[in-house]
Amino acid sequence: MPYDNFTKLRSFLVPDTDPSFIFDAPRYSELAVKNADTYQNADPFPHIVLNDFIDIDVSRHIASAFPKPEDADDWVICDHNNAQKRYQHDETFLPIPLRRMLREFNSRQFLLFLETLTGIENLIPDPYFIGGGAHISGTGDFLKIHADFNWHDKLLLHRRINAIVYFNEDWDEDWGGELELWDKAMTSAVVKIAPHIGRIAIFNVDQDSNHGHPHPLKTPKDTYRKALNLYYYTRLRDEAEIHDPHFTLYKTQSPFAIGLGDTYRNRSNDADE
Image (cartoon, helix red, strand yellow):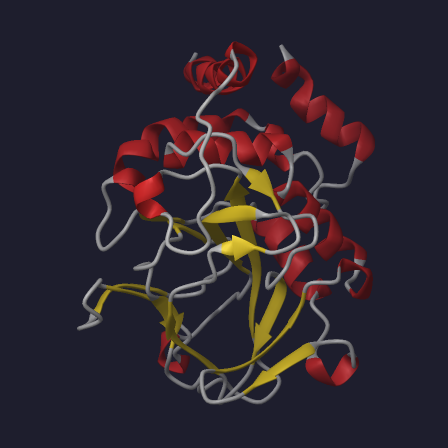
């Protein structure tokens, strides 16, 4: 089986802190299978928070690779009433460890993890990282509660899933920066997620997936909230979920496509043996 030589393969090809191939590890398929019901039935909308999702040594390596705002002029700056932050979705401006990590989150193995966890088949990653990529926020920065764009104008796909991975060691929750998931009526935050290192937050995207970190950060000088934001899409979507634009839906799936997911999910059983 492909996983039998996973550890040996990593030891030959990459150092322990390199993110390459990490989603080949069988623990990820096991996590997806075990948490699928929890994810799909979560309130206020399908979501999950998984701690220690990325190995601590790898996470520290990624965290150290984030350029600080004062060390790079290439951050895209958001500075308006609804958001104050920096991000970079052009990977050519990012250090190699961040580029490799981003590509792992666009890999076949991570897509199969997401499909198993969320129950949404035929997910497609965004190689352009539009609106995603590396995000960094400092003191005073914020992102007001919002529902994300639901359509990728270049790929012509429906946005379905967000995955946000945090790289903040020794984060003091008094600094703020919690990702808040709000109810449909926008009355209150139902879930608050502190941005601790190695933690991932995954959630569905639709018209009512209200989220953000609306309170200005209170971090010390030179301390930043670091995250990688990944977005995933499908070509088709249930008609009831489509708001604008609307296209004809053809709901077909080949036995081969179904088999990819079945094979992946079966590997979680091998991890238990």
